[in-house]
Length: 94
Image (cartoon, rainbow, N blue to C red):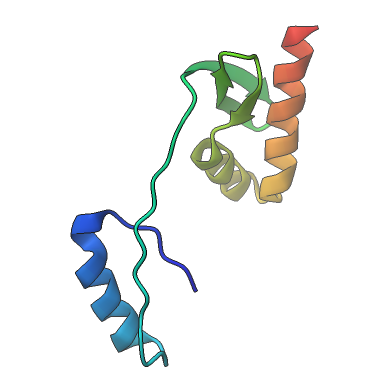
């Protein structure tokens, strides 16, 4: 199991893992992240609007939480909503 958390939450998360799982120990690593500059556009899917992140080079990805909420509300697989969002975005580029 992996947990991604803010540094200030690491002790709380470690205690939670030790209390709620069968593990006898927890390894804690520090990680850094680099992100490309991005902007957002909204694309229309059959299940509703999805925010779409676009980088400077034109590539992008649908916002996970938007897709997850729409999939849950519609009772369809998450990957279906994500595929529909990608298709909607690429159709606007042609």
